[in-house]
Image (spheres, rainbow, N blue to C red):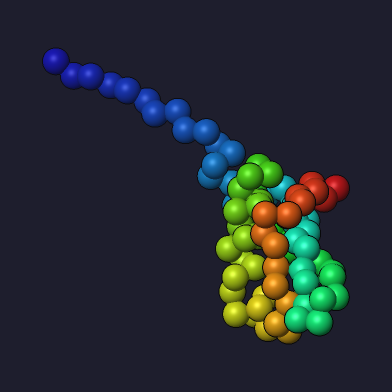
Length: 84
């Protein structure tokens, strides 16, 4: 007996990065002197949750830390906006 099955995969998960929606994720920052600001990350992701996760990961990289010049970042206060 031969069983044949076709696997249907969600095509949206296999898009190239350039085809994914662009999200702008802003995270509040506080400098060592108490000055408040925010750092914004442009990330490509399928959903808002994935965008927040990607931006949080990027926020902890060396280039992002260097860009903030010692400011603390509040990843829990992040806001994601779909860029049109």
